[in-house]
Image 1 (spheres, rainbow, N blue to C red):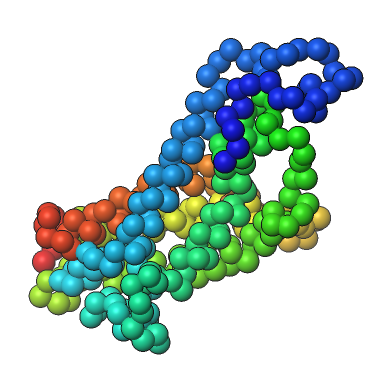
Image 2: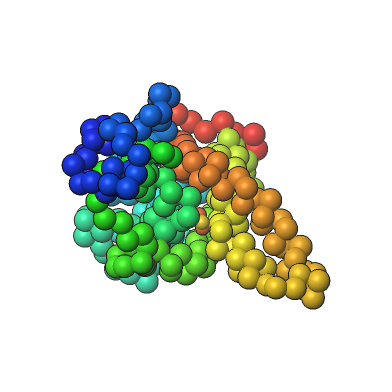
Length: 276
Ligand code: FES
């Protein structure tokens, strides 16, 4: 992380270059412009810390009597998974403790959010100070944007989007199979609502993606020749206006869902049951 942009740089670049009006301050803004990037960094840091710990601990991720599976362990594809939690078989044998049980999709989900257009804005500002806020001079003397390695890789976002659609389908299946009663057959408890709300919001976030908007119809020239794609593009565009809110909401629902499953699986609380 670069130094906090509070002092005047000595580089003579940007607003301090020779041809610009001579103002010594980095910014003349008097509001708390540093607050949003600070909150962003704290929020992202908290999620990364929680998700990392939970992905590695291998405890309390499956509730056998109700078939609740936390999204951080889905799909669970190895022999190390507790019995019943592998909805798609166990093609992988035992895994050493340093490999998370959700290793097949976790890197792709990380890549999906890292290359997301909204998150790029968020961490370019809050972590790299590029810029820290509008009309606040950067601490960097050089800027190449996303034209070089490694940042040129951000252009692969659509491929992470395709994988995220598949993972959303898997999470949907998990939410459906979780309608399981203690005595077998159909069951319905508070955990089902938690899992269902999470998966619906995950779909909303995934479908509100900027790449999805482009793929659905954004790259077309003549909407009149493609009425169906025009309709899809219109719906995705409406969702897309909420993309930032959905990015944060789904971080929250992922943590809450995992936390709820953890509490029930560890028998810290019991699930509120409506049916069986
Ligand atoms: S732009 Fe955010 S998920 Fe695609």
